[in-house]
Image (cartoon, rainbow, N blue to C red):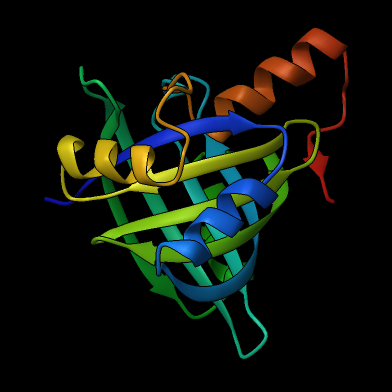
Amino acid sequence: MSFEIEAKLKVDSHEPVSQRLKEIGARFLGEQVHIDYYFRKTATPEDRPLRIRKLKTAEQSKVFLTYKGPKEKSLYKRREEIEFEVSDFDNAKRLLEAIGYYQALAFEKKRQLWLLNGCEVVLDTLPLLGKFIEIEGPDESVIKKVQDDIGVGDLEHIKNGYVSLMSKKIAEAGIEERTFFL
């Protein structure tokens, strides 16, 4: 069973963190664009999404199908994650729809990916929500050290995922649209 353990932090700008990552020798892995399509059934809890992700880099495009389990009690966001590559976005979407799922939300995310002390440090930009940092690692102590090392140790952790944050923002603004691109 695979678990993701991550700290999610809201920031006004990525520039200070990006600069700090360079200074302390983090390895820049590249830039990505994610277009995430979230599916659910009416009776499925919102915190257990099925997602089809189109991942694009300068070199390639891939499609992944992901299930995220319920959040566990933890200082950081921790949950089961099952993810695998699929060869055909349209067929994956048709399969989910055929078994009773509907597309609840879709949005684009721009991501810079770094590696530091065994943790992925990502700098994300999302429509409606702005800029975030996610630090995903093997355990809470390593994540906390990386958070301190990059100068964001005092920021509050956000335990909700992007789909939950986006849904809340859409509801608060009274927006009917459910697809958002940068």
